[in-house]
Amino acid sequence: MPTRERVTVQEFKQWLKQFDADGDGRISRKELREAIRRRGARFAGLRARFAVRRADKNHNGAVDEGEVEHLIELAERELGFMITADAVPPPRVSSSGPPSGREYKVYG
Ligand SMILES: [Ca+2]
Image (tube, rainbow, N blue to C red; front, side):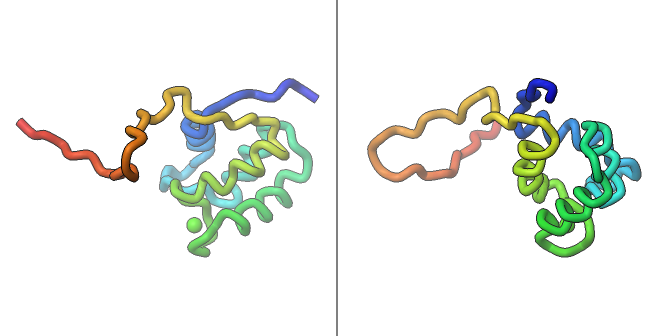
């Protein structure tokens, strides 16, 4: 078993993107099969089918950009990736009061 490759979620998305053969921004079952095959996993076709079925929340038959996060479990368990938090941690919110979750942009 090769050592696990540590990647951030962002890097995993980037990696996956190269298999988006038709460039529609979604990973189809066929494209995912290629990705899985590239990682050297066996039964790529089957794994792809199950993975898409699990990740495809809006049932359009492919994994959209926003659905990629549902592939992380698969990536870790079956593709030898180790998905880490993004390298740059989010800024800390002050301890008093709930986080606003909203930032005001100043223009000009
Ligand atoms: Ca979808």
